[in-house]
Image (cartoon, rainbow, N blue to C red; front, top):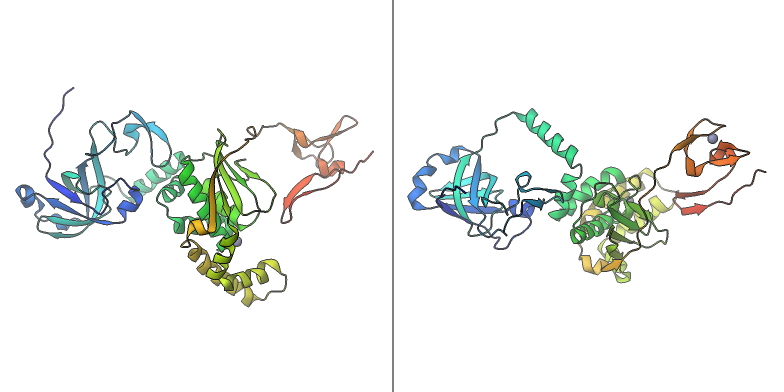
Amino acid sequence: MKSFKIPYIGIIKSKFTEPANPGLMREQESEIEVYEAFAEGLFKTELSDYLEIYFHFDRAEPYELKTFTQTGDFKGVFGTRSPSRPSQLGSTIVKLLHRDGNILRVIGLDALDGTPLVDIKPLHIPFGEEKLEEIEIHSRKNNPRKLILQNIRAGKTDRLLLDAAQIHGHFCPGLAMGVLMATKAMQIIRESSDGLEDLLAIVETNNCVADGIQFVTGCSFGNNGLIFKDIGKTAFTLTKRDGKGVRISSKAEGREYMHRAHPIFAEHYKKVVGGQNHSDEDIAQFKKFGIENAFATLTLDFDRLFKTEEVIVEIPGYAPTHESIVCAKCGEPTMATRIEMIDGIPFCMPCAGVSGSKLDGQGITLSKKINLK
Ligand SMILES: [Zn+2]
Ligand SMILES: [Zn+2]
């Protein structure tokens, strides 16, 4: 195999000495020291706002040609940015903050302290913004949960909460708790959901918490990755198909801890969500304290709020797919298993006068069968 030698032209100084989350590393400033022998090569470098930094992944694990990406995909190494690659060459785009002689102060570099530097180039993007957006859209089509997974890996619960509120509609400590619980479980299980039931969330309550869990885990009502156990506990289990899961539940003493952290919100929540008699002012106050308290919840001590345990779960089979049968009375296509046959004629449940179970604010409610005949 042919190869060539690359000289080290400098060294990277970072506060990270151990491999850490690249997302977190990129938020920190680092220093690039170019050796004196090459320092003249930095002349006018500061005219570029952004630089491409090339370095040697000198502490990378031996490579495998197929590997897992940061967002949980399994790919050939050349389709990833894994440090474990045949060339051991790393590259990152950084923002240049300041040059002082042979020292560049940058932000956005995800290299460990002491990493050998091999090259610096000004950033060049060979296409315009439109193309960049097209690339981003294409990448999101292939991994729709990419941004969420990146935020989970980086522990950015504030971003996740902000995004989870898109389905929840308001900010509240409950949603924040769901985000915290789900982020923790996802970090432990380290599996991404592609919405095909390989990852399951078993939720034990139907309240605000459940929306945080659905958003962060990607196990939702619609993709059958969400299992609802109607037992009224602020708890959930995240599990893979092998049944090895993690259950996170709220601690009794956590309630007191939380209540002390935001006493005013509890009052407004009771008034607005619990009661019918609330004014516009009550709603406005509820929203205001909701935002404050939701984000404050993220900063609370996780282990004081929640118990985390490994569990073995009995997993249901994959959701079956059923054909639809058209109801003889209303003409609406209906899942075959929900069809009532009366004298050999198919009817949907309402047309047959049969009611089943439903999930609403009360939980799962069951109604008795009305026998028409
Ligand atoms: Zn809520
Ligand atoms: Zn019908």
